[in-house]
Length: 524
Image (cartoon, rainbow, N blue to C red; front, side, top):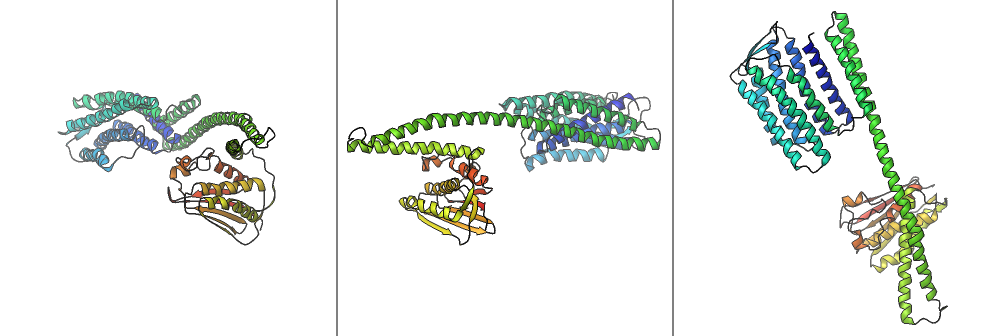
């Protein structure tokens, strides 16, 4: 094996390793399409190796396959520019525009003598290819496809406002332009004048394409010292064993080296994958830990301010208003009492508002205390619905309650469960301008299901995703309920989950009402 073939083997292993690294990094569609692009480059390099080692009987076939592979590199690169750096589906019209000329060219390369008329093995130098009348058309095809791809990438880079995206496009442009210029000169232009001495250089230069695109695809993530060391060591071992395989002097050596290469190749892929996975998980954990710490710090500060400042001041104001209504400070005119009562009422609402947020936060983060005892869920729901019936009547809403027969005994916190059920029903009443509220309590086996169905404003798909999260108010909820805190349903979720149950909501969309469900375990 000569030095040029060894260089091609090293380039081939490098390209393959980079392609594998991208696929192992992510199973996203973009990465898979990039791997296909890498495989066409790899195919071009492999066909060059076999073309250089071909016999008189197979030289023509490998020459034709060599130029078929080159055309696939061009068409795949152009297709890749439609999905890079942000993946999007490519229309059928575009696919036909890219692939149809390529299929015609492949047919002309493989059949007939219009592009390649023959090839000869040169024992003292590089092999020789004889060109047909349409070879200039082939050269123009490659030139057009590559330049159209470069044009698309340049336009994308100019239009992008994202720094990372610009950097990705820059890397791909630099890598493909450098390799494209080299390959076009050494593998297309010079051979057209009968100069074949450098027709292997283009395949080696495609390593630049693979490195630049790989770096852009993975967005610097894998260029961690640990990953680089692992990949370089793995690639080096692959190259050494592959070279040994290609220079095997006996069938026994060929078999042993072949099996060894396959085993080392598989182990190398698994090793790279494990290192990549470990680093990705570590990065993800570090980011999550930082975000969680920041969120916890902000929440602690907010709870501290609300608990010790806002709640305290509202409590003082409530006490002051209440004192003024006692006549302990003299007779207060009736006209003034009206204003004082309004002030007391608003202050009480303010305290309840703050208390609701604090309890919602506590329930969400698991710090809400519970006093678990025997509870009759049916009696609890009846007590809550009896209390809220007048509120529904004030809005002239039909309020229907159906409690199934049977034993609904369970273990729970009566106070927190009552407030959770109250929050859900109050929520439906608040967001139902007209129509009805229907409450069911049923049981199946050891599971109790509480359902609240309303004919209210409904829930949009976007609002449904944040419904049970802290601060998760719907986009237009404040227009309907000015007292909404966004923490009522997060409190419900926290309480229900603390009782090992689950809560969810269903709605056909805005203006179509909503149904809320709570499932809890019961003893009977």
